[in-house]
Amino acid sequence: MLPTEHRLRRREDFATAVRRGRRAGRPLLVVHLRRGATDPHVPGESSPPTRAGFVVSKAVGGAVVRNEVKRRLRHLMRDRLAKVPPGSLVVVRALPGAGGADHAQLARDLDAALERLLGGGAR
Image (cartoon, rainbow, N blue to C red):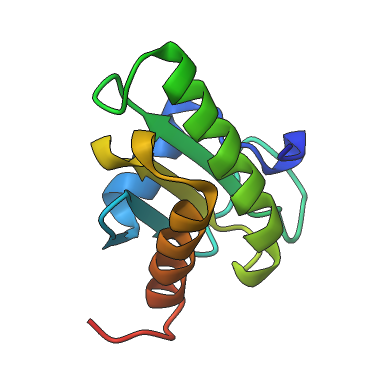
């Protein structure tokens, strides 16, 4: 499970990451990254933690499938938080194909998208 301090919950934080961040698309998901954003809700903190949020729409599948995809993405993101600079906002949006994908396929797409956003991959 993703620790509470690393969860993105506020609508305006999701909007900031999506509108002002960079985006990398893969066949199963789209990752939005806003580097080094300061958290206005935590006063006096010098380096806020990286926070991640997930968007899984009804196009992915029914409630059971959507919750399964969210659980998998949270688990995958927890292991990758150290790669993302502190204070960053990450939004992972699952695409319709994610409902039928297995854990390894989601991990591959998430790794490729993060690698591209963090400067390791070319377009």
